[in-house]
Image 1 (cartoon, rainbow, N blue to C red):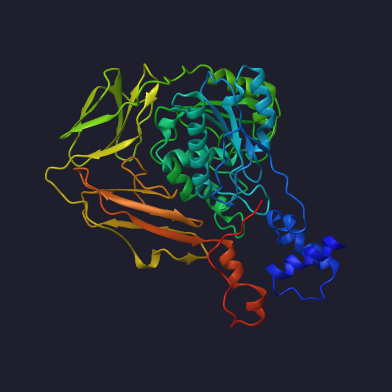
Image 2: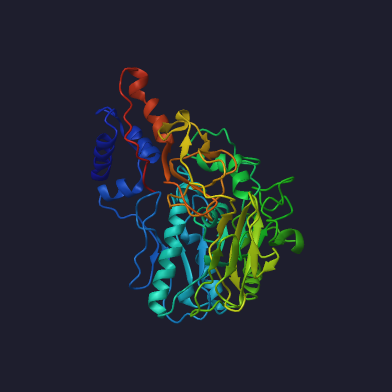
Length: 492
């Protein structure tokens, strides 16, 4: 009885319109429907369970979505291989990967080299989205690399990543938005919606709207993610998926190969092996994990002592600063990958944007991606503008943002991850679609490399805004102000 009274007090405090005479049924219904357990359970003296199996000295970063320290696991001890980070899918957590952690240890992976952190909501009422979770993945990867560099006494330059379901498009968006392909030696994408999933709809209205807009087949978000190539950089790519159209219900025919990536080692496991593993089983069966392990072990270990190669520009000529390194370059919208021709130097062509990274095959290390453009005369980068109808403010529905540079010869790069853009950030070639609350930062780069001041736009597109504007108070009294302070709901 004491707990029920406390529950009612908490609900009355957070939802002032609940009548004081509400019955127990109403209280329980409201509790189940509205109250995040991080708020509710401590209020009645209970502690929510979270997985927190981290080594001494490691402080997990805070989730961008929840504002809470991320739960999960990581190990300690000797490390003789590239660290492996598991990224889970939508509405689940790092606990999903516990069976994989145990199996990989039996195959010789060090405890210190196996990590997974829960980046998002861990709740079917609050769906995650790739855009909103990118800052969390950035924090995960950087924190693991920094911790292991300190513990081992040698810099950790690269990690391997296995992503599942939403974790696939999330990791791909993280690498693209933060220009981090050089940090990932090998990426395994299991059951990802790289070409969409039938359960997603661009016109969805609910807490799942962000991810539904992103992963709808043919969505502008997927078009932007896949633009420039599906397997950029020196990163090795493998996909693991059903392929039959029957085992994984999220990818029925004709979407049975949505998970495949052009340029990757694509393994439609059920189709090739006659198995029927479903969406959650596929990455955690002993035989599929062994297939992933065998592929990971094909890659040589990167040097722990060598420096990253760097691209050197002199006038309109590009070269590298290490004799064993070479350039991988592509022009226009294309991003370079391991299949591009290898050259020691490159002369820039007039009026063409060229994207390159340097790779040293002897050390296994690469530079970050960088973009260049040749100009016949010095030009200032100019100024970036956005139309007044698309300025940063609160919106109910996804919008597209059109950017314009005052200097036509400049090219535009942008990020939606909250990180400052650099020349290797996504190249702006079409309006950027925004489906959730995020920061869009863009800048113009002149042919001689000079950069404009950044244009920073904070967009607020959330269900919380809709709930405030369509609340019961406003339905009974339309003159009531919308109770909205620009904050998203927190909790798992």
